[in-house]
Length: 571
Image (cartoon, rainbow, N blue to C red; front, side, top):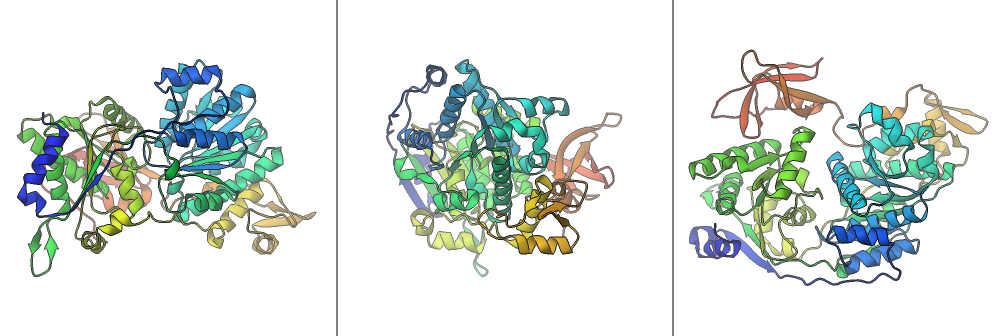
């Protein structure tokens, strides 16, 4: 197997490759900077860290932990894989050891991230034999365990959707949590932008309102990837002042990275069209995978993931390499399958993965050596998040951004300094958007009646809005309080995201007489264009023909077929 430096040296000598390289940047390695805490860590926490090979803390970690200990709300915005999670794990564990009744709430934008952090937190707790418990609570939690989790002490790990619809409306069952809540941790806050972020900001308003009712006033600890406005974004999201720990304080080491911007060759001079970015990504990934370099390939669409995976497996098999060591990863795969892929990447058994941005966020997959980005992902922040999936704290890594024919991709190729010299984008939200906020006012009124003159976050006087809702029959005003009139909690009808929560299961019959087997799922609102009758559904490089779509049963019946085409709905 050829080491990575030799592969890159070979690419530099390859004229067919180099004539399409727009930029080749070398990002030098960075030495670590250690920090010192102004107080000793409890022996149990120190032992737990040592058991996890953490014998000292980086400067940004100690700065964040110190600021938390001084009572500040803190947002840490440093590079990928810089160890941000210890910035909140250590102060949370320390507080619970000091006051066993103290509670902490961890919120992650996806269930996968929440599950990942639950495993990591419990591993640290076990390593130090600490008298602390961490529990997950989401749609995957068995109903028989939910009552135990509601009464449990320690750390609760969930996502905003579950907090919104499964915890806040039932706060009387969570009295212990709300009465003793010392910390709220928001990780990956750069994901909370746009409509989703505006919804989450309103969920946090409702959370703080219930905390005040139960007599608690939690500190907030946030973490973010590199964005232009982490402090402003955290303060807009939480509506509290924050102390910022930024990249200038980052003490984590970083190995050297080579970043290549590649524009496929022109194939139509008259139209100015360039070759397929998908095929270029295939060729680039093969250069690394064939030499045993662990590689991640990002694609912007689920179907592109499956096409690239098929191409890579076919080529690797033709070369006599182990094709099954390359896998896909995207929404629609079952949770167990995704966990197995993540574990395979950490252990090294999986040598390559083709993924959507589902792996852009901080799920622990170890540190790979090469990342291929198929098409500009839409933001500078996403480019560096995806590029950051390759790169260890020591040693060389490479990232290649392969441009598509999209005008924005071509603009970047014509102006590469936009990518390397420009600040990442701002994360923007508008919690006061009335179409969003009114929905959460109804949710909040169900949780606790609004008192006349009560404020809602930083919006100020909401009485005029509540009066309108009363006129429409959604609320009833009595004794200077506004009450929800319905029976069911309104939160169940409010999605925090643009897509619905309902799914259609993909059920395959591998051979006549075999029992049906669920292989994946799709969102209900995308089912008409992905699993319509006669469509080709692709899963882990296998092709299936959709025989029927049962809307009532929410099941798409598929069977394996060998075809050399794929389908795309015309809408």
